[in-house]
Length: 118
Length: 107
Image (cartoon, rainbow over all chains, first blue to last red; front, side, top):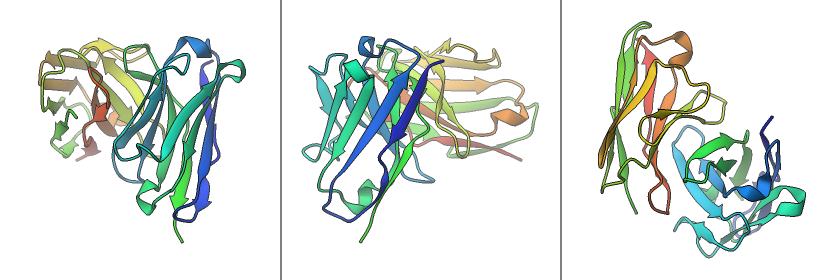
């Protein structure tokens, strides 16, 4: 069974950092592009970042560029999102999502909540 | 960035009715368009990709159409489990972008 499990969310003060993790299982992790997508509770979906199978190519939404960094460790079937200089408007559920190699999110994790507040 | 616009924001329907949801792209995305369903407290689920191809396990009452800038998701004969929020997403260019969503609610 394909499974994505996020962890690392929590309450953090503005300007601080947080590192999210996503543990993947049930598929050949290093065959696929992976993404982070976020959702403010009660609002819509926003793509945050994506990373190629080997980490050689990454992309970010303008809203997080320069503050967030996506990475992966294929040997451990893990995806990461390093979030620095967090702002209150980064408060959201963060989902890890598998790409079907066309840019389509064909599998999602359950999400981890990040709250940025003083 | 390609802006995706969905309409209507809310659709009030009765079970058994046919629902038609629209999605418009600010520039052509060809057929690089996906639809997702999200129920309260759950992650999104892929319904349609390539504008009209149903994902694995998606019932035939869900169908997608369109290309270029105009797309439609049709749900024939709404079932109780279909009341949810639906999002479209373009994947021709990064940044990948979503529409604002259409909530299909029980009338």
